[in-house]
Image (cartoon, rainbow, N blue to C red; front, side, top):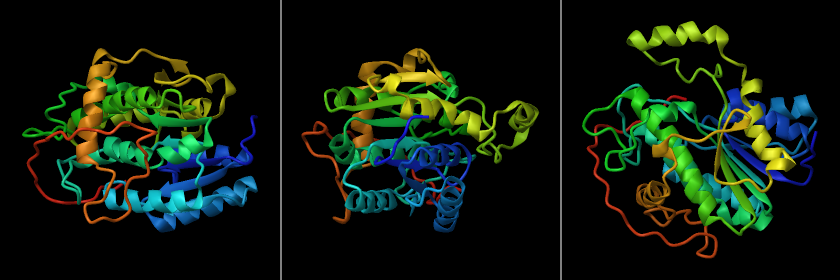
Length: 317
C-alpha cells in the first residue's frame, strides 16, 4: 500500500458510499483527509468513524451544500486558509433530481450538483493543487454518459425535463470538464482524470418512480459494494503508475474511450466558458471568491445562457 503521509486530500460526498470508502482508504494511507458532506452532523460522524477505524487523527470534517455556490465558495476559502497545499481532490458527490427544480442560484439541481459544483470547487482550489504539485484531480463520472445528448444550448432541461437524461448529461459533462481541465493544467504538475466506478449500491436512485424503478430494483442484488466502487477512483488517486496520466476516462480500473459527444475538445472548451458564467469564481456580493490565479488558468469570456426558473430548492442527497 502506497503511503500518503504528509499529503492533503479532499473528498466530496464522503459521509457515505464511495466517497466514504475513498476517504477511509486515504486516511489509512496516512493522508490528512478533508471529509466534505452537506450535513455537518453527518460529516462529523464520518470524521469520527474514519479516525477510529484507521487510527488517523488528522481527518477533518467540512460541511457544504454543493447545490449552493455561496457554500462552495465559503468552504473552499476555509480549506485554502487551513491547507495552502492540496495534493488530491476527489470530486465524488453527485445526485439526481426526479423533478426539474432550481437551486438557490436558479440553476437546475442535477446540473448544479453533478457538474457545476465540481467545476467551481476545482477552480477555487486550483492554486492549492498547483502549489502541492505533483497533485491529482479525480472526478467520478458514469457509463451512463453514453446515453446523453449533449446540447450546450439547453443544459437545464428547458422546456422538457427528464431525470435520467439530466443525470446522463451531467456525467458526459464530467468527462468534458476533465478533458478541458487537463488541457489547461498542462505543465503545472497537476493531472486530472474521470472514472466510472461501476454499478454500485449507493442509494442514488432511491427516488426513481414509475416504470424505471423496477429494473433498478432488479439490478440491486448485483450491484457492487461502495468499497469495490472505490477501487477505480483510488487507483487514479494513489497509484504511482498514473502520476503522469491526464485527461483520460476510465471504466472502473481500465481506460475507456468516451462516447463521441463526451470527448470533443471544442465542446469541452465551450462548456468551460458556459460553466464560468453559470458558476463564477467571485461571489456576486463580494464574498469568498476566486482561488485561481491567471497563471494557473486562462481568463474566460462571458457566455449567455437561457433558463426558465421554476422554484428554488436544495437537493436531498
